[in-house]
Structure formats: C-alpha cells, structure tokens
Amino acid sequence: MPVATPLLAAILLVAPTSLVAQVADPLLPGARIRYQLVDASHRRTGLVLERAGDTIVVAHKAESPRRVALSSIADAEVSRGRDRAVGALKGVLWGVGIGVGLPTAYFLGLGAPHDKRDDWAFASFVYGAMGAMIGLPVGAIVGSERWQPAVVGTPRVGLVPRPRGVGLTLSWVP
Image (cartoon, rainbow, N blue to C red; front, side, top):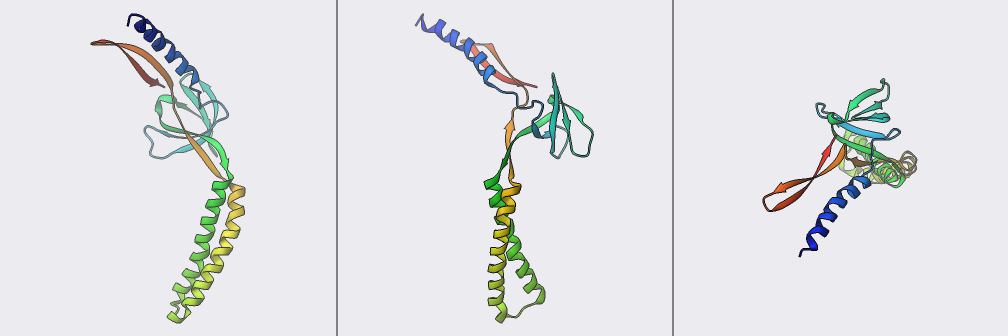
C-alpha cells in the first residue's frame, strides 16, 4: 500500500492538466453561435468576431456588433455546418404536409358531399407526392443546420481537504 498512495497522488495531479488541455474553446472568432443570455427569454444567433478575456464580440444580422460577457451567457451552441440529408427529410415532410393540406382545405371549404371522398383521397395522394418531389431537392439544397452544445468557460481542477484525505473538484469558470 505505501507505493499505491504516491502513485495515486501523481495520477490525481497529472490528470487535471490533461483534462484542461483537451477542452477546446468553442467560442473562437469565426464561429457561428446560438446563445441565450441569463436575463433574456429568447435565443440570439450570430458570428463571433473577437474574443478578449471574458468577453466576446458577436455580429448579428441587421445590427451592429455587440460585446457579450461570458458570465452573462446562460446557454450556448456552436454551428457544425449544414446537414443535407436532414434538410431533405424536412423538405419531404413539409412538401407532403402542404400537398395533403391543400386538397383537404379545398374540399372542406367547399363542403364537398360524401360521394366526393374518392376525389379528395386521390387529390391528396397526388398533391402529397408532388409536394414530396419538390420538397426533397429544395430541402437538400437548403440543408438543416447542426448545433452542438458549447461549454462556456474554463475548467478548473482543485484539491480540497476531506475528513479522510483529499478530494478532487472540477468546476467551470466563465
């Protein structure tokens, strides 16, 4: 056991530095981010222009760039580009929904009699298929943005005294 204690202490002291070195900062200049401030109810999307210490400068559409303190960010996500397959699937779903919805609204608006149900079913099928054929390429071209949660701050590792030895703490500091 005497050899295990110094070995364990060495591992505990080396592991935190390895952990801190592996955490990449997601809020670097050029990153497209979506974030929510602590005192705001809605999310904002913008491009990180600059990072200086505990603040970032974010550019938004149709607004001038603004400074945001990292401590005021409640939640943040970083864009990882657009996914064409997910966009195509969303396009198909939107196309089918609109394609089936149009004849349904038309027949309901007319108050069509029961003998016209076959016409409604056929029109819904045809327009739904056409909507899917249009939605597939449009969705694939537009794509769907992928967002990855971002940890805002820097990990801090420390040792704290415990009744029977020493404990390891891990915290995130903005």
